[in-house]
Length: 223
Image 1 (cartoon, rainbow, N blue to C red):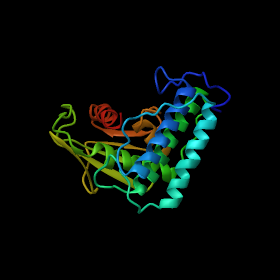
Image 2 (cartoon, rainbow, N blue to C red; image 1 turned 90 degrees about the vertical axis):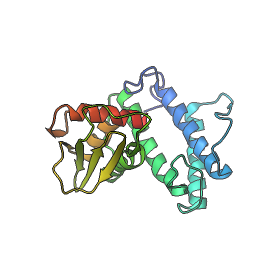
Image 3 (cartoon, rainbow, N blue to C red; image 1 turned 60 degrees about the vertical axis):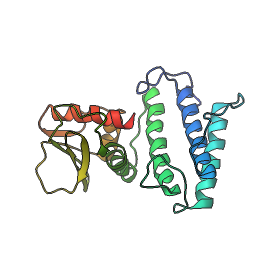
Image 4 (tube, one colour; image 1 turned 90 degrees about the horizontal axis):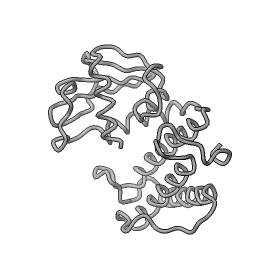
């Protein structure tokens, strides 16, 4: 699909073409290879690479990263930007999610979106909430509709209760009634969280102001 329409615009990434997405993911893979090899954040970055076919460069970077993963194993140490997990396993997960979301970008450009595997999608929801959203927000206070509120995300047999305080966000065990709930197919849910799909296929209950504010806060966390 990427080879058939490299100049196609990507609606989920303004100003990007399919070629830009492919090149971006290539550099992401190369960056993670160096994180593992150097045991530190690569600096300077990015490197200057010779002009070549983007898909050939992508395939080569993917195979090199896969070799690093298989050689090292998930328990091996690696630099990551997430302090609680400094292992190669963090990159196993992160790169699986990175690849899935950018696959959707390319499919959106061709208007041929296919579902993300249910288990992978549910894990993507978990990562977005626990790794990227939860934590200290004292440098960037939450929007007023969220303070003191809870939002439950639910997909298949899994659910996450997100609690918003004035300067922090936590993912809590269930057992309490949320102010708002968003539920549905895990692929639709993770796509919505990452801004790659609409809210409409999902079921929304509760406070109508909380859900769009939640999505805006997730956008700040995921970039």
